[in-house]
Image 1 (tube, rainbow, N blue to C red):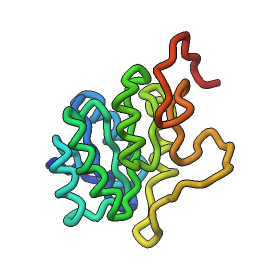
Image 2 (image 1 turned 180 degrees about the horizontal axis):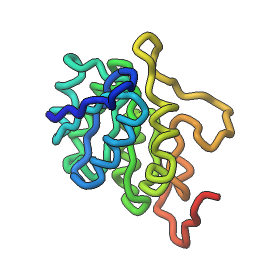
Image 3 (image 1 turned 180 degrees about the vertical axis):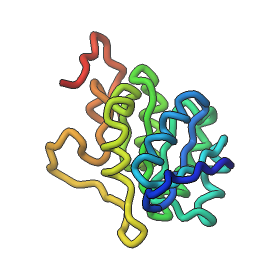
Image 4 (image 1 turned 60 degrees about the vertical axis):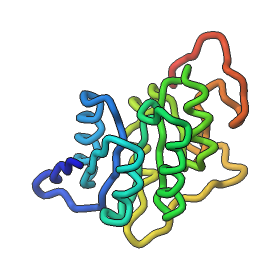
Length: 171
């Protein structure tokens, strides 16, 4: 595990537990986490993700679906969710099976890579809980584009089929 200290003067808002295989992108995520006043803990496997939960008591988990090689590893992520830690998962919009597996594992929010890159700060702020508040829960009837539990564009349900066609960016 690798902890990145917060910026001078930043408040410690808690720890964000991060599971990302891409070392270069993990730097961008950790820099954003630090800029928001959180500590970051980077882990290299789903098992390490689950085992870190009791010692770190994170306020948010961030999971790259491409870091989950074995479908059974989603059980490790579910363990974290069951401890009332919100989990934000992201992945390529063409990796339908991985995004579907994340949704079925019960993650708080599933987004495409593009949306995660574009809205990273807002997503981290929205889903990270304060140390004294419970994890966000699914809400019914909310038409907000940042609704808890949304799937990437083209996926209308956890069991939707892969879509064909062009994906447009967010305006």
